[in-house]
Length: 157
Image (tube, rainbow, N blue to C red):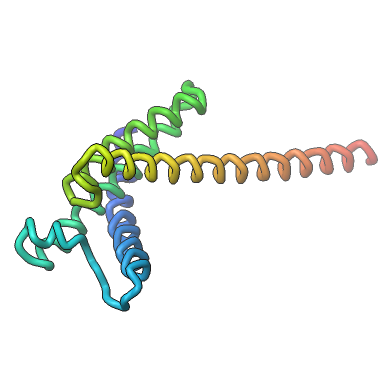
């Protein structure tokens, strides 16, 4: 399990950086004036320069990716039910993302800012869970249909 955890964390680090970079592009497109915003102006101000902010954000998004990937071992604990796995996974990734978002100034430092960020994070998590559940159900239906078809073919022989 430790080997699997370490391997996933190592693979998750560059994935986190890539996702973080994509999110900066999407945020820049959302701002609408054609400029690229690699990180929040507040972070640039706190760390003293844009390059320092970008380097710090790159490291943090890499660690977030490593954390998400590492937490995926939770899904391999077969003795836990899906509800427990989902709850523990949500708590684990929340404990990674929310402090990082606070530290990186991705959220307003107020109760309202925290609740808005946490609400968005939770909504995003729920949407992903619903989509994953729909995909799993679709795949199960396809497998069952394939098994029925194979069973019917054997009965005819």
